[in-house]
Amino acid sequence: MDNKLYELIEKMYIDMQEMKANMATKDDFQELKGDIRRLEQNLARIEYNHGEKLQALFDGYMQNSQKLDRIEQEVQKHEEFIIKRVK
Image (cartoon, rainbow, N blue to C red):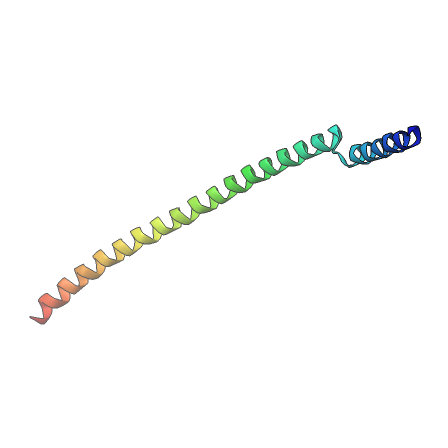
């Protein structure tokens, strides 16, 4: 009986040692926290850069729209002049 009990305790000890080896350590968690922090910083940088690029695209769109409006006004003036001369 003592031999079986000893074997059972030994098996439990070995299993616990294997579980301990497979468990994440404090250093692993610190490394993960560092990785998450770097990911957050990269995400913030990407969002900022994309925001600037989107603003530049919007500004370009507005400039083109304003230029087209001015061209349209000039064309209307010329159309009115041409229509008056034709009649």
